[in-house]
Picture 1 (cartoon, rainbow, N blue to C red):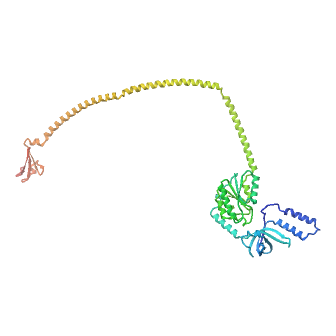
Picture 2 (cartoon, rainbow, N blue to C red; picture 1 turned 180 degrees about the horizontal axis):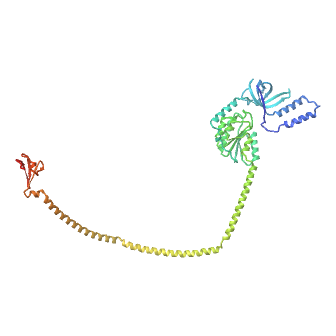
Length: 471
């Protein structure tokens, strides 16, 4: 199994001794070329050189000869197909390892190279050990990442914009860690007037996830922040694991305040980086993103101040010119009062004339109304109506008399005409009416011998039988 070594930067950044000590070490060797070193001096200088040059590295390889004595320290060899290196991991460090190293297991070790001066042994002092390749934590990371991505928690359209100039920044991190120091240093340099409040929380260990969730809840309930930074310094996947917890990711997604994720170094990625509104590669970068350059803003303010002064001067000049024009048109108040007094007198005269004319018109209207009232008096109207009623009564009586006379004359004429055509008048002159079967006989051809007939006279009737018929 092949191994690889990668160098990294320690969590507490400081100038390396390598750049200072190596030249002096080489110069010292050249100056004292003829003076031999003791074994102790040689091993001491070699250890300093190794620890300075390889202060923080990661090495991948296969475990061999794992030993765990009563002291609690771990000792093992890390090897690949062609080389090996002895490793030691002390009790205080190996407690955080979530698995027990075993013979033949492929692991990734982070630590520093040193030299045990007593024996002159070259060794790797391990600070952290994790399963190499797709280990347990890495598998859990990928599974949660796929799950949350399928739910849409990483979608770009859900990301909220960051404020151009934050009014109050909340930082959720360890109050004693390097991350808060870096953030405050950057903000002080770029825009020191932005208020910053630290919401303390553990950022490593089993209890860190719950504290991060609680800190997010407290920050949102306070409603005093317009952006939150959630983060910490760099570390191993195990160190950064609280930021890969599902509860933390969902708390960030549910936050009403925009969240910037600033976890680890630029090469480190956590679940919070994907679900947050913005991912900053480092805590310092988060502060850079949220704080505008004060010199740039000062330049803008000065530009707008000059522009405002120019506009004010222009406005003042226009106002002064308008004032001069107004002063030229300004008249003596005494003349203005005299003019108003004369106008008031004219208006008083016109008012008196208008009142008199109005009174005259009202009097004339009153007289007309009185005349009209007299003409329309109920007593006068009743008298007129009574007179018309008497006249119409006489006319109606005359017309009714005439109509009755015409009707009586016409009735007599009709009675005479009716008497003339009445059958009774004919019967009174000796005539009779013969009927057979209800029909009037007007011709002898209507009868036959033996028929029963009925003869009507003026007074009474007679039933007869036909003996013979002559035609």
